[in-house]
Length: 630
Image (cartoon, rainbow, N blue to C red; front, side, top):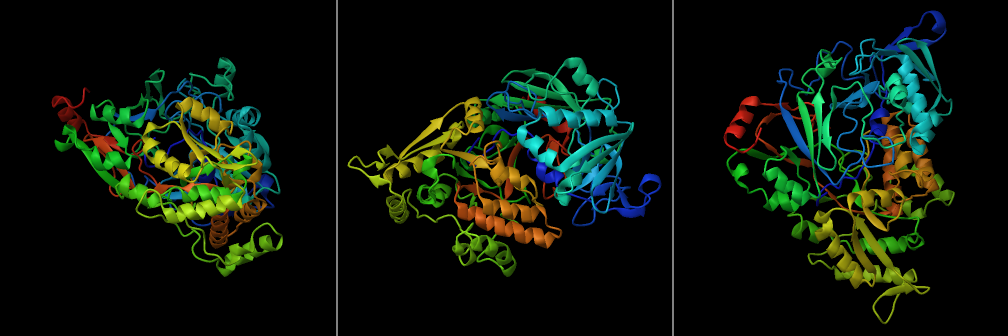
């Protein structure tokens, strides 16, 4: 990507935090089989609080109900693709591969910690959350005209448990003990007694609508790459593609949910196009030429210096900053802790001291960024100062058991080192040198550091040429420290293969967190996931972290959860498994002047593919002016 937010290839890991939401509905006595239990029946679920939207809502608050339908929006993708199956590690999935897939439950951009029925009418569950019944809609249909049923959903669950990623199977197997078809459109998920209550319903509702008949007819597998997309029930379906060049999705004219309140003001484009480029620089030139029409700009250099082309000056292209209420994105270089040389924290600290954010921000980023401090920045879950009494109650037992250093109880939350105005901060160089000397990495006559005859080497793995100007000064500083540092820029497919097999020293990783963290933390930071998850890329293996995650997962109040997250944030920073990079609290975007969007935008979504719309009269002006070809 570029010198802003670093985007890595992911499948559907993002759904873990949205799926961990819960619901409060109307408690009512059930009849027949559940007469002895208090059963909640509701259209949504929120474990910690009330739902924002009632059962009879008419539209979402942040959409334009009068938004016109039609037209196209075109975005860009980087590198290559050879598959449309995002549920396997085989191959590299094309842009927006899940765009045609819909889940049982959904979330909204102004109520992101709640889950609402989408493919279900209602859900039922007992007070102890030992099971949930989804009363599925009977009008959900696939593009082939066939309906969707509980049998399809049971098949989909079994498919993921047989052919899904190992980390997925492990996580869901720990929660769901049984799936039972009760009727054509009624299905029951039962949960293991020792599974965390807060995540049960949300995780059961994460499954997409797949067709059993389609899988049986095509012979498709979930664990194999394929250029034939898995058929879904969504409003968009694949229209055409050219390998490594373009993907086009079209809106169905027979979409089953077209007239539902959830669809009002949404899914407004007839067509969504993804144009592929080798790198961000080539993509920017393509944008200037009108090859695609919406660009999220992640390069501070481009944002500050390159938006001076005629289409912008003439008002044909809009350059603007949009509200972003999300957490500060936890982006940074991560160490591969599986490698012996990085298992000494002093080595990691020394290397981190050589990255000069202050100089980079001033010289490379035009002062547009802030430093990432931790994993829940821009929220009330960020660790600040010394531990509170509530945090101490969680941390002290871990210190007493020898799982944490006692300094965690008295020290302020670790912040990244501050550097001076010059690229090489000599004070930090001296600190780093002392740390490496102490760790046994001694400078030889040739200026290189060695331990037991081995040179201390560091390879930064990346696929984006736009990041060269950021990596290279870091590498130069490391060489001044006596480290044999190199940048290995590979193609996107190689980067994917090497990170998946944990074949790297340092690489940029984005550790996106949620507003109600829960079991997804085990994938990001849990010891069991260190050799099977694309999230725990660094290979963190900390019993203290595991215990804190257990506490967060088991939280029964929001405050209990917040305290647990602050303690975890504090401990994760103390592990020093990353070199924090940067973030900005606005969306920097540019687009051809033919789109409208709600103002204000919701806090937690930019929504260009969801609730923006096409203005045909403005498009006609752009075409007439020769700015766009269509």
